[in-house]
Length: 276
Ligand code: PDD
Image (tube, rainbow, N blue to C red; front, side):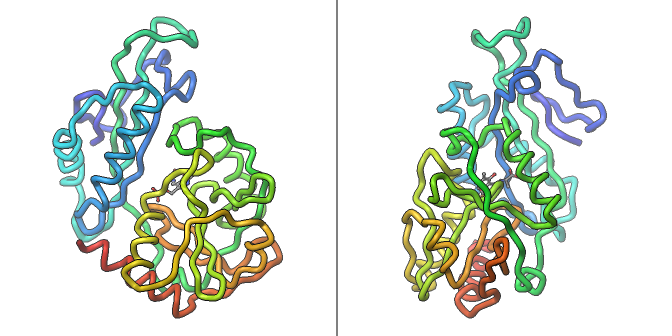
């Protein structure tokens, strides 16, 4: 069962118009929200980011916080609380009369579904992952969690072809983020991540990693990272709602430390935040 425009329907019966602007233009925004043992993680933060993104794109927010929560809970009831879940929520501008760039006041299309979330366990994460450094060719509003994900899809293809987990992106030798994650480096015990800007998505997991550093008393900064600083780093991590805090063992041919005591401390603190 999924939620589509006010109704709970079987996925196979969930149909939208070919004139939906999400389909025609990628004209919409989305959220990916992890649910740990039945508890929605950082719900306020996700709904606030959704509201901000709807504001940036001039799409009216169709539901209140309470209404979203009720929909999520109905969908989550389908699953056992023993498994972790992930909520996918997409809101497009709606269905136009014909295919045209301009739009009048439309009713947004709302699609929400839940799936099992397969997060890597600690031992698997500790082995470290591979990545590749690529030029960031995306637009300059990457702060908007837009459903227009063609660049991201092509980066994923590149990563798959190279047999690596993620692409790390740079603009003019300044690291922005991963194809679908945020980036952290650790150098001499200091954790650094690029500052929030139009060039990166303000990841909710990113905020929680910084909060974990704060709680654990680890020095952390939000500052630009050059590609040179990346290559010289002791550790590189990526974060997202579906990956948590993933250490990279290498980017292209450069290796980094994984499963260090510092990573462990941040990882452990992050786990405690999940149970709040
Ligand atoms: N992606 N940066 C980009 C470009 C992303 O697509 C994502 C998440 C993040 C991390 O954000 P968060 O911590 O809020 O998940 C950063 C999701 C998981 C996706 O597209 O499936």
